[in-house]
Image 1 (cartoon, rainbow, N blue to C red):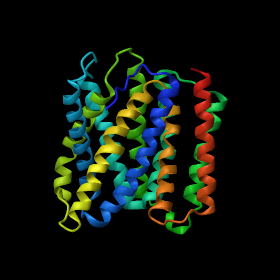
Image 2: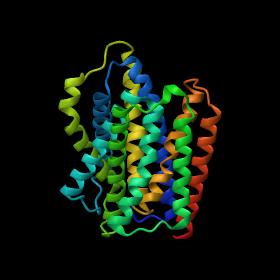
Image 3: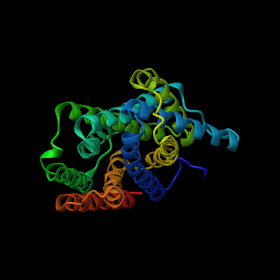
Image 4: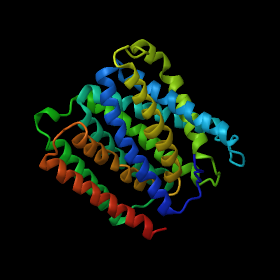
Length: 304
């Protein structure tokens, strides 16, 4: 695994966050297939995803020799990051169960930029300016089109909406905290931070996963194990290490909006792999999101 430094230029930070969001978009397709064939529920799937991601990062850490020269994350940071990640992942899968994949995704990622902007403003004094506010407004408009234009089957159910908002809160907490800690000048290793976060997440979810049903069924077990391995590797261990590295050097709200690439990549995969049609509203919402991501990224680069 390549070295991920927190002292990155803004351009590379944006690239890391964009790559992480693209990888996250593939997690939805993998999870959809696992829900169909594995018998795993949302909490058990999140547990295996976190445990597998932690195991992969631990193996890489041992192979690289322990990340010498990097400051160790404080216990407080490890705990808070882990709790935020637990809330973000588990609440998202619960939202998917109660209100469906499309609504859960767009509500979570649509409300997260607003929460991040408020948190960045209150805790770090970050100012978005007109360009940033316009970009966030455009992103929210695109997400609204995706939600409201999908027909009656995509209606938001109250319990699912509550879980999606809880997931957004966990995401926003991680994003704002990562940026805040980066301002202290302590060069933590993002891979170490991610490893600790996933370990905390797995420990928190273990009893709930056991109650839900910890092990997959024997049906299609080889493909289930392959999908679990992919889920733990690409959209988990790799993507989160990239995200923590990139989010440390760009503004919190910018990282949150750039991460909206996730529903775009998920929509493309759903159309290409799962044969889900792209409706006119989906295309319009996708275009608005892309324009918003581009506008906010350009604002970030001009300020770097």
